[in-house]
Structure formats: C-alpha cells, structure tokens
Length: 116
Image (cartoon, rainbow, N blue to C red; front, side):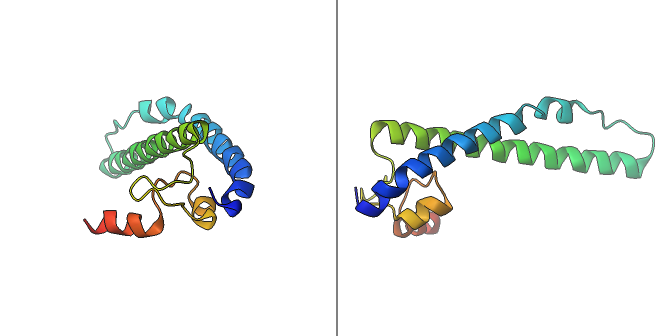
C-alpha cells in the first residue's frame, strides 16, 4: 500500500462509517414515505403523488445500493484490501478514494468495465 493511501486510510475509514450511519438514518424514514396513499379522485394530484412515490422508491434503491457498497468497503478495510483494485490488484489512487470512498476499481479498470 502506498504512503499516500496509508496516510488517508484512517480518515477514509471514518468517512465510510459516517456515510453508513447517514444512509441508515435516512433509510429509517422510507417506510413512512412509501406507505403514503396515492389514492385521489383528482387525476393531477394522483399523478403527482405517484411521481413522488416513484422518486422515493428510486432514492431508496440508490441508498440501498450505496449502503451495500459502503459496507463492502468497510469489510475491505478490515481485511486489509481497501484501496486495492479488484481487477488489476493495483493501488487505487487516494484522490479517487476521497471522491468515491467505496471505489472497488482503479480508474483505468472502471473505465474498462463501463465500456464492456
């Protein structure tokens, strides 16, 4: 593991823990938001409520996927593999991890994955 990553690992670990807590906190309100009735005799109001609920569902799905990635990153920290690309086994640059703390791939491998 490079020196730059070693010096940023502890703050990134703290950031991952904070992200996980924030995601869990926001997920606690999901059941209430999803339980809101979309029934309405007014077509416009019904459409608005339905659209709002669709956005809520999409946000909840994104939150769950991000939470899963954050938890996987925390497991990699525990295993000592955090900051190592899962494709090429190279070091993920510290700047990439600062931008996306749960990154699993270096930029070159991520670009290759998205092209395929």
